[in-house]
Image 1 (cartoon, helix red, strand yellow):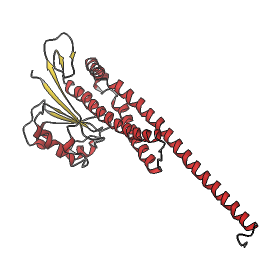
Image 2 (cartoon, rainbow, N blue to C red):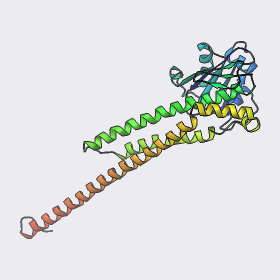
Image 3 (cartoon, helix red, strand yellow):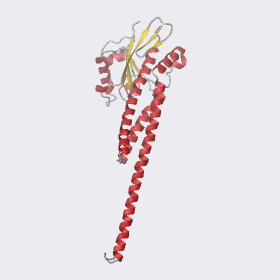
Image 4 (tube, rainbow, N blue to C red):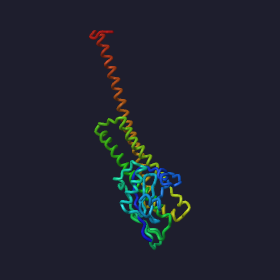
Length: 280
Protein backbone atom coordinates (compact mmCIF):
# COMPACT_ATOMS: atom_id res chain seq x y z
CA UNK A 1 0.00 0.00 0.00
CA UNK A 2 1.28 3.47 -0.88
CA UNK A 3 2.14 6.01 1.79
CA UNK A 4 -0.68 8.33 2.86
CA UNK A 5 0.23 12.01 3.11
CA UNK A 6 -1.25 14.61 5.46
CA UNK A 7 -1.05 18.40 5.39
CA UNK A 8 -2.55 20.24 8.37
CA UNK A 9 -3.23 23.99 8.45
CA UNK A 10 -4.46 26.25 11.24
CA UNK A 11 -6.25 29.07 9.43
CA UNK A 12 -8.58 30.67 11.99
CA UNK A 13 -9.89 30.40 15.56
CA UNK A 14 -13.23 28.82 14.77
CA UNK A 15 -15.13 27.30 11.84
CA UNK A 16 -18.89 26.73 11.82
CA UNK A 17 -19.11 23.15 10.59
CA UNK A 18 -22.90 23.15 10.56
CA UNK A 19 -23.00 25.89 7.92
CA UNK A 20 -20.87 23.74 5.64
CA UNK A 21 -22.92 20.63 6.46
CA UNK A 22 -26.17 22.37 5.53
CA UNK A 23 -24.67 23.68 2.28
CA UNK A 24 -23.30 20.27 1.26
CA UNK A 25 -26.43 18.38 2.27
CA UNK A 26 -24.90 16.44 5.15
CA UNK A 27 -27.80 15.58 7.54
CA UNK A 28 -25.81 15.83 10.76
CA UNK A 29 -25.49 18.25 13.67
CA UNK A 30 -21.82 18.66 14.51
CA UNK A 31 -20.51 19.16 18.03
CA UNK A 32 -17.24 20.88 18.93
CA UNK A 33 -15.05 17.77 18.96
CA UNK A 34 -16.33 16.15 15.75
CA UNK A 35 -14.52 16.90 12.46
CA UNK A 36 -16.42 17.40 9.23
CA UNK A 37 -15.03 14.83 6.78
CA UNK A 38 -15.43 15.53 3.07
CA UNK A 39 -14.66 12.73 0.62
CA UNK A 40 -15.93 10.97 -2.49
CA UNK A 41 -18.42 12.70 -4.78
CA UNK A 42 -18.94 15.55 -2.33
CA UNK A 43 -15.25 16.47 -2.28
CA UNK A 44 -15.05 15.87 -6.03
CA UNK A 45 -17.79 18.46 -6.62
CA UNK A 46 -15.86 21.00 -4.55
CA UNK A 47 -12.45 20.41 -6.15
CA UNK A 48 -13.86 19.74 -9.64
CA UNK A 49 -11.77 16.60 -10.10
CA UNK A 50 -11.91 12.84 -9.60
CA UNK A 51 -11.25 11.74 -6.02
CA UNK A 52 -10.01 8.30 -4.94
CA UNK A 53 -11.17 6.49 -1.81
CA UNK A 54 -8.29 7.65 0.40
CA UNK A 55 -8.40 11.33 -0.56
CA UNK A 56 -10.33 13.47 1.90
CA UNK A 57 -10.40 16.77 3.78
CA UNK A 58 -11.13 17.02 7.49
CA UNK A 59 -12.39 20.36 8.82
CA UNK A 60 -12.23 21.01 12.57
CA UNK A 61 -14.37 23.52 14.42
CA UNK A 62 -11.34 24.95 16.23
CA UNK A 63 -9.98 26.37 12.97
CA UNK A 64 -7.79 23.62 11.52
CA UNK A 65 -8.13 21.67 8.29
CA UNK A 66 -6.24 18.56 7.17
CA UNK A 67 -5.74 17.46 3.56
CA UNK A 68 -5.26 13.71 3.12
CA UNK A 69 -3.47 12.63 -0.08
CA UNK A 70 -4.12 16.07 -1.58
CA UNK A 71 -0.70 17.64 -2.04
CA UNK A 72 -1.19 20.01 -4.98
CA UNK A 73 -1.38 23.67 -4.03
CA UNK A 74 -4.21 24.38 -6.48
CA UNK A 75 -6.38 21.72 -4.80
CA UNK A 76 -5.83 23.33 -1.41
CA UNK A 77 -6.44 26.81 -2.81
CA UNK A 78 -9.75 25.75 -4.36
CA UNK A 79 -10.88 24.22 -1.09
CA UNK A 80 -9.79 27.22 0.98
CA UNK A 81 -11.75 29.54 -1.31
CA UNK A 82 -14.76 27.26 -0.85
CA UNK A 83 -14.27 27.49 2.92
CA UNK A 84 -13.91 31.26 2.70
CA UNK A 85 -17.51 31.54 1.49
CA UNK A 86 -18.56 30.42 4.98
CA UNK A 87 -15.78 32.15 6.94
CA UNK A 88 -14.96 35.40 5.07
CA UNK A 89 -12.36 36.46 7.65
CA UNK A 90 -9.98 33.69 6.55
CA UNK A 91 -6.89 35.25 4.93
CA UNK A 92 -5.73 32.96 2.14
CA UNK A 93 -2.30 34.57 1.81
CA UNK A 94 -1.45 33.45 5.36
CA UNK A 95 -3.08 30.02 5.19
CA UNK A 96 0.23 28.12 5.35
CA UNK A 97 1.67 30.08 8.28
CA UNK A 98 0.88 27.27 10.71
CA UNK A 99 1.42 24.03 8.83
CA UNK A 100 2.38 20.44 9.56
CA UNK A 101 3.28 17.77 6.98
CA UNK A 102 3.10 14.12 7.92
CA UNK A 103 2.69 10.67 6.38
CA UNK A 104 1.55 7.15 7.21
CA UNK A 105 3.76 4.26 6.07
CA UNK A 106 2.60 0.64 5.92
CA UNK A 107 5.58 -1.68 6.36
CA UNK A 108 6.50 -5.00 7.91
CA UNK A 109 7.30 -3.80 11.44
CA UNK A 110 6.85 -5.48 14.82
CA UNK A 111 5.33 -2.38 16.45
CA UNK A 112 4.37 1.19 15.65
CA UNK A 113 7.29 3.52 14.88
CA UNK A 114 6.77 7.25 15.42
CA UNK A 115 8.92 10.07 14.04
CA UNK A 116 8.35 13.79 13.58
CA UNK A 117 7.74 13.27 9.84
CA UNK A 118 5.92 9.95 9.60
CA UNK A 119 4.48 6.98 11.49
CA UNK A 120 4.98 3.36 10.48
CA UNK A 121 2.44 0.61 11.18
CA UNK A 122 2.27 -3.03 10.13
CA UNK A 123 -1.13 -2.88 8.45
CA UNK A 124 -3.70 -0.28 7.50
CA UNK A 125 -6.78 0.34 9.64
CA UNK A 126 -9.71 2.57 8.68
CA UNK A 127 -9.29 4.82 11.72
CA UNK A 128 -5.65 5.80 11.11
CA UNK A 129 -6.31 8.77 8.75
CA UNK A 130 -8.82 10.40 11.11
CA UNK A 131 -6.71 9.88 14.24
CA UNK A 132 -3.56 11.22 12.58
CA UNK A 133 -5.51 14.18 11.19
CA UNK A 134 -6.95 14.94 14.63
CA UNK A 135 -3.54 15.03 16.29
CA UNK A 136 -2.05 17.17 13.51
CA UNK A 137 -5.01 19.56 13.61
CA UNK A 138 -4.57 20.04 17.35
CA UNK A 139 -0.82 20.49 17.00
CA UNK A 140 -1.01 23.30 14.42
CA UNK A 141 -3.86 24.96 16.33
CA UNK A 142 -1.74 24.98 19.49
CA UNK A 143 1.17 26.40 17.50
CA UNK A 144 -1.07 29.26 16.39
CA UNK A 145 -2.17 30.01 19.94
CA UNK A 146 1.41 29.77 21.23
CA UNK A 147 2.40 32.55 18.82
CA UNK A 148 -0.61 34.67 19.79
CA UNK A 149 0.40 34.29 23.43
CA UNK A 150 3.88 35.50 22.54
CA UNK A 151 2.41 38.65 20.98
CA UNK A 152 0.48 39.39 24.19
CA UNK A 153 3.68 38.93 26.18
CA UNK A 154 5.45 41.41 23.89
CA UNK A 155 2.79 44.08 24.50
CA UNK A 156 3.04 43.57 28.26
CA UNK A 157 6.83 43.81 28.06
CA UNK A 158 6.48 47.29 26.55
CA UNK A 159 4.31 48.29 29.51
CA UNK A 160 6.90 46.86 31.92
CA UNK A 161 9.64 48.92 30.24
CA UNK A 162 7.54 52.04 30.75
CA UNK A 163 7.06 51.12 34.40
CA UNK A 164 10.82 50.73 34.91
CA UNK A 165 11.33 54.22 33.48
CA UNK A 166 8.68 55.65 35.79
CA UNK A 167 6.45 56.54 32.85
CA UNK A 168 3.58 54.17 33.44
CA UNK A 169 0.37 55.89 32.45
CA UNK A 170 -2.03 53.16 31.36
CA UNK A 171 -5.46 54.36 30.33
CA UNK A 172 -8.66 52.43 30.87
CA UNK A 173 -8.90 51.70 27.15
CA UNK A 174 -5.41 50.24 27.00
CA UNK A 175 -6.05 48.07 30.05
CA UNK A 176 -9.38 46.94 28.61
CA UNK A 177 -7.79 46.17 25.25
CA UNK A 178 -5.03 44.07 26.82
CA UNK A 179 -7.52 42.31 29.08
CA UNK A 180 -9.68 41.48 26.06
CA UNK A 181 -6.68 39.92 24.30
CA UNK A 182 -5.96 37.71 27.30
CA UNK A 183 -9.61 36.73 27.70
CA UNK A 184 -9.78 35.85 24.00
CA UNK A 185 -6.60 33.82 24.32
CA UNK A 186 -7.97 32.01 27.38
CA UNK A 187 -11.24 31.30 25.56
CA UNK A 188 -9.33 29.75 22.67
CA UNK A 189 -7.15 27.78 25.09
CA UNK A 190 -10.09 26.52 27.14
CA UNK A 191 -11.54 25.19 23.91
CA UNK A 192 -8.59 22.85 23.78
CA UNK A 193 -9.74 21.18 26.97
CA UNK A 194 -12.61 19.84 24.88
CA UNK A 195 -10.61 18.93 21.81
CA UNK A 196 -8.05 17.09 23.92
CA UNK A 197 -10.80 14.56 24.62
CA UNK A 198 -10.16 11.28 22.84
CA UNK A 199 -12.14 10.48 19.67
CA UNK A 200 -15.03 8.05 20.08
CA UNK A 201 -13.30 5.19 18.26
CA UNK A 202 -10.55 5.11 20.89
CA UNK A 203 -13.07 4.13 23.58
CA UNK A 204 -14.20 1.02 21.72
CA UNK A 205 -11.03 -0.06 19.90
CA UNK A 206 -7.87 -0.76 21.91
CA UNK A 207 -5.61 -0.54 18.85
CA UNK A 208 -7.01 2.90 18.01
CA UNK A 209 -6.61 3.99 21.64
CA UNK A 210 -2.97 2.84 21.78
CA UNK A 211 -2.18 4.52 18.46
CA UNK A 212 -3.85 7.81 19.42
CA UNK A 213 -2.21 7.93 22.86
CA UNK A 214 1.18 7.33 21.26
CA UNK A 215 0.75 10.21 18.82
CA UNK A 216 -0.59 12.57 21.49
CA UNK A 217 2.44 11.85 23.65
CA UNK A 218 4.89 12.16 20.75
CA UNK A 219 3.50 15.58 19.75
CA UNK A 220 3.45 16.63 23.45
CA UNK A 221 -0.06 18.05 23.19
CA UNK A 222 -0.86 17.67 26.89
CA UNK A 223 2.42 19.27 27.97
CA UNK A 224 2.00 22.15 25.52
CA UNK A 225 -1.54 22.75 26.73
CA UNK A 226 -0.40 22.77 30.38
CA UNK A 227 2.32 25.31 29.57
CA UNK A 228 -0.22 27.53 27.78
CA UNK A 229 -2.51 27.49 30.81
CA UNK A 230 0.38 28.33 33.12
CA UNK A 231 1.51 31.25 30.94
CA UNK A 232 -2.07 32.54 30.77
CA UNK A 233 -2.26 32.59 34.57
CA UNK A 234 0.98 34.59 34.65
CA UNK A 235 -0.49 37.08 32.17
CA UNK A 236 -3.48 37.66 34.42
CA UNK A 237 -1.19 38.16 37.42
CA UNK A 238 0.90 40.73 35.55
CA UNK A 239 -2.16 42.55 34.25
CA UNK A 240 -3.63 42.67 37.76
CA UNK A 241 -0.43 44.35 38.93
CA UNK A 242 -0.68 46.96 36.16
CA UNK A 243 -4.30 47.60 37.05
CA UNK A 244 -3.48 48.11 40.73
CA UNK A 245 -0.62 50.49 39.92
CA UNK A 246 -2.76 52.43 37.46
CA UNK A 247 -5.60 52.78 39.98
CA UNK A 248 -3.14 53.87 42.66
CA UNK A 249 -1.74 56.57 40.38
CA UNK A 250 -5.25 57.82 39.60
CA UNK A 251 -6.15 57.77 43.29
CA UNK A 252 -3.02 59.74 44.17
CA UNK A 253 -3.79 62.27 41.44
CA UNK A 254 -7.31 62.80 42.80
CA UNK A 255 -5.93 63.21 46.33
CA UNK A 256 -3.50 65.88 45.15
CA UNK A 257 -6.31 67.71 43.36
CA UNK A 258 -8.33 67.72 46.57
CA UNK A 259 -5.33 69.02 48.55
CA UNK A 260 -4.72 71.78 46.00
CA UNK A 261 -8.38 72.83 46.09
CA UNK A 262 -8.28 72.96 49.89
CA UNK A 263 -5.11 75.08 49.82
CA UNK A 264 -6.72 77.45 47.30
CA UNK A 265 -9.85 77.72 49.45
CA UNK A 266 -7.78 78.48 52.56
CA UNK A 267 -5.71 81.06 50.67
CA UNK A 268 -8.83 82.80 49.38
CA UNK A 269 -10.29 82.88 52.89
CA UNK A 270 -7.10 84.43 54.31
CA UNK A 271 -7.03 87.04 51.55
CA UNK A 272 -10.62 87.93 52.34
CA UNK A 273 -9.83 88.24 56.06
CA UNK A 274 -6.93 90.61 55.49
CA UNK A 275 -9.07 92.62 53.10
CA UNK A 276 -7.15 91.91 49.95
CA UNK A 277 -10.20 90.31 48.40
CA UNK A 278 -13.77 91.57 48.73
CA UNK A 279 -16.18 89.41 50.71
CA UNK A 280 -19.52 88.40 49.25
